[in-house]
Each structure stands twice: as C-alpha cells, then as structure tokens.
Image (cartoon, one colour):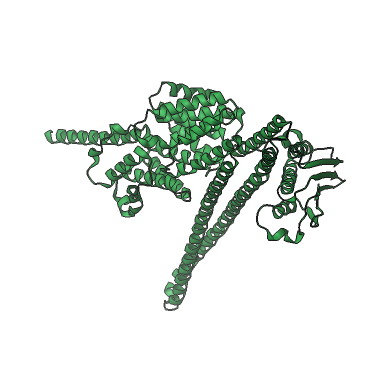
Length: 625
C-alpha cells in the first residue's frame, strides 16, 4: 500500500514538473513575441545545450536586428545531428532563427527563409501548441507582407489558420493587422475594414507594447496617405515615432527608418525643407536587408525634393541611385522565383530517377525468378504460377502508379511554365519602369532645364519673368507627380482622365513655353478614345521624340500630326533642326529610337525615319488599331 502511494506521488511530481517546464518554454516564446527582452536573463541559459544556444541566438538577434554581426553566422554551421537530438523548442527555434537569418540578411534567399518558417509551423502543429503555431504563422505572414512571395489565396489560408489559432488579445490584434495588410495590398480603399482598424487602434492607444503599437500606427498612416490626407498621415506617423523612441534596445532601428521615410513622403507636397531635414536625420548604416532596401527611397524622395528646389544635378544623381537600387531589387525577386522553379524541377527529376531505379530492380528480380523457375520440379510449378500471377498484378499496379506519376509531372510542368511566365512579367515590368523613368520624367525635366537655360541667358532681357517661373514650376510639379505616381504603383494622370490628344497638347504647350521651340499639334479623325495601354505607349513615344528634338535638333519649329484612318493610326513628328544620319540609329546606345522601335513592334506597327543633315527630320509611325 505504501509502495503504491509512493509511486503515485512520484508520478504526480514528475507530471507537474514536466507541465511547469512546458509552461516555462512557452513563456519564453511569448516574451520574444512581446519584445520583453529585459525579463529574460541570459545567465539562465549558460548551460551549453543546443536549446539554450538557440535561445541565446534569438535574444541577441531581437535586441538589435544587426544580422551582419558575424556572431549570427553560427546558425548555418548547425549539423542535422544536433537538430535531431534536441528538444521540440530547440528544433522550433532553430527553424525560426535560420529563417530570420536568411530573411533579414540575403535578398536572394527568401525561398529558403519561407521553407524554414514552414518547417517551424509543421513542428508546432505536430506539438499542437497554439503559442508556437502563432509564432510561425506571424513570421510567414510578415515575409509575405514584405516581399509578396505568396499569392493571395495562400495568404488567406495562412491568415485563416492564424485567426483560428489566436489564443490571446495580442495574437488577435496581430491577426487583424495582417488581415488589413492583405486587404490594403489591393490598393482599393473600399476594401478597408474600418471596424478591424478601429479595434487595433484602440488596442494601440491603451497598450504598452511599443513595437506592436508602432506598426499599427504606421499602417493607419499609410491608409490616410492613400486617401491623400497628408496631415492625418503625418499625425499617426509621429505617434509611431513616439512609440519607437520608448524602446531601449536598438531593434527599433528598422521601424524608425520606415517611419521617417514615410513621413518624408507625406511632406513632399507640403514642405520640401522638412523632407530634406527628415531624410538627413536617418541613420545611413544598414543593419539588415530590409533597411538596405529602404535606402533606395531616400534617393527617390531626395531626388524629388532637389527637383523642386532647382538642384537638378542632385536630383539626377539621386534618381540614378534610386533606379540602380530598384534594378537590383527586381533582379533579386526574379532570382528567388528562379530558385523556387529550380527546386521544383530538381524534386521532379529526383522522383523520376527513383521510379526508374525501382523499375529496374523489379525487372532484375523478375529475371532471377524466371531463370530459377527452370530448376524447380513439377511439384512447385503451381506455386510458380501463383507467384507469376501475383507478379503481374504488381506490375499492373506499378504501371498504374507510373501513369499517375506522369500526370503529376504534367501538372508540375504546367506550374513551372506559369512561374516562367510570372518571371517574364516581372522582367517586362522592370523594363517598363526604366523606360517610363527615362521617357516621362526625363522629358519633363529636360523641358524644365531648357526653360531655366533660357531664363539664365536672357534674365536681363525678359519682360515676362514671373510667367516663365510659373511655367517652370508647373513642369516641376508634373515631374514630381509622375515620380510619385510611379512610387505608388499607379497608372493615372492626364491620359487616364482626358485622353491622348489633350495630354499631347498640354505637353507640347509646356515644351513651347520658352519661345525657343514652337510645337504645333494637328489631329484628323481621332474622335474616340483608344485602348488605355495604346494611348499611354503613344504618348510616351511622342514624349521621347520631342525630348530628342529639344536635346539634339536645335530646331525652332516642330509639328505633331495624328491621323486615324479606318484601321490605321498615323503619327508624323517633324522638325526644322540640324538633322542626322539615319544609318546611325542602331549604333547608339540608350533608350532613344531603338526603344521606340521596340514599343511600336509590340503593337505590330512600323517606323520610318527621313532625316537630312541641316534640313530637319521627319518620323512616320503607323500602328494598326
């Protein structure tokens, strides 16, 4: 009897001890989530177990996000044997830590980061721990928010699982935050869920979780920025900055840069001096990949500010720096998609090789059985027939399985083709953005520069000085609007609102403002709107041609003629400038006539150039409609 009681007491003590240890491990994850780093004593994890090493790695990372510190490279040196022998918490933190290492350090390893976050989620689901599940889901959704690796369907599935697993108020706020982020990515303000927004805002107004409060205020500020309510956007961004300054550890660096860049963007249409002041206050050191990618927007906003303040050299240099950074980011995104495609291809090839080896093995076994059959007596023939029947059944099943594998391979090939198309689309989008920066912003700034040169050379002779300044200011405003529109990924402007002809007329009027070049616009038969993409392309082509006239022709007169026939649109751009040798068109680098030819070929059109030295240039474009 006493022995039975002793056994029960020992079992009860062991169970309670195990339960307390589980609670302690989950409390560590919650402390990480809430950034309560001061509450965790590193001395408690001095024992060099693998689990403790992963806990210390995470503490050091969360304190400063400085992933370029060589200390964090140790995560890549972990062996599979170490992970296999550790605890659930140790293996979970290993996957989360390695995912963060790839996510915050490398632009071309986001696929690897996602895979490790998903592995952490699988561990959490196997353990049936909501605390671990929410931690893994939050990392996956944060990666999606920053780099758009998942499509909307996948995002919704992870978000649905997050909403179902949220175990306390903080997790529910995070889930609703990501729900608003997902809806906000459509850039359709009608999708904005005001009820959920008010819920998370009420939480931020009463919470002492400065990190979570700050990202909520940043999201609300972005919403008001989309609504063109700059003052409200600035108010919420200032509140976010106030929360971030409460954080004593340097991990607030990344969010500080995000807030300051957003605030600089909000001030662009209000006070350019404030923009320069805010940008100069940003720490130039990048402590992780996210901060490095934020840096490109410093160049963009400073370029706009320099343009408004007539610092064209600085504006041009900053615009070049922004374009280079944007090209690098686009390349890295394409590289990630390529890696994902390569991984799927290698998996398919590996499965194919396994099937071939299994089939050869079965064939060898069949041959051995057939040869051995001749040595058996008649008494075992029946047994052999039975085995042969069974063998045929297995072969039939294998053939059926191979057929299924073939069908799966076809589906995988289709998926690879879809990814190829997506990569091609990203490359086209990169080329389009580079071309638009050259054609649209470059043309407007060239016209502005021409007017300033005119002002500089004739400042003592001009009577309408104020009028020319106003016209120049209008050109700079247009350049700012075009760049800001590109930054917000929108396709709007004069063309979308009024049509092709009004846009060309306005552009010609602005380019003629100095009096050094007079541009006449004529149209015949163009009574209806064209396809929006065609209108934009035609407008960009004419912009580029007029820019070439301003830069190179030394012409005093030019004309733009647009004629719509039954199934053909004819465009003639002429000038009385110094002309050039048409044979040199394809020998020159840049985005000039060669780029225009590519755009016209896209619409199956033709381009003819007629130019004679000192006798001007005539360019004829015909596009089927």
